[in-house]
Length: 257
Image (cartoon, rainbow, N blue to C red; front, top):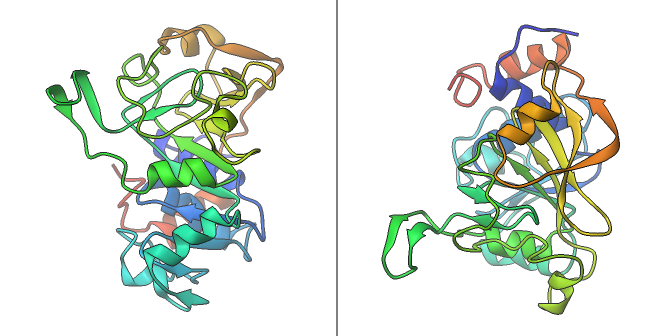
């Protein structure tokens, strides 16, 4: 194990570990790219990365800076269009998607549209959905990577840009979303969160080294459930950090922030 790492390196390594070989992953810009590339170069050589601009299963030579970067098409099996990759989600062919947002609530609903006020006159106007609503609605498992604090983890999001479990068990299906899809894990700088099977509420599953339950709860705007047996997140290994720093992001685009 290696203790010499920063919070972003921890997030990337944890995100990478949650990806399985031969799975399909819809990848967004930033930390998700680093996590997917690390997985591809370590334990998931056959991961099928999908990018919004239309490429499928590239062998990325380095860190792309956007979903339209030419590196996302390098040696790809398919170089197509946004319509085609979104159709793949509709057909149930995508296992995981990585998302983020300005706010998230106890049911995994995400807000990247507005803060405060009304939709017509918000205090802050945010970028909006992009493809996030479609991905969380249609992909089997939604992974969220975000720092944890009271401003982001709120009891009720100001606007549901991206559906989680809406207001509890059965709500997604009642809204017409595919059975079995939905939030899976939330990866933060303090812990890994999952969801309770009975209530669909967020719960603490694993604490990062040196972090307590009280510290996690102090940085959350709603009451978190706890797994029956809390685990300690294994820190990044020396080999994970070597690949991340030397092969994935040597320029520090992500991990050097």
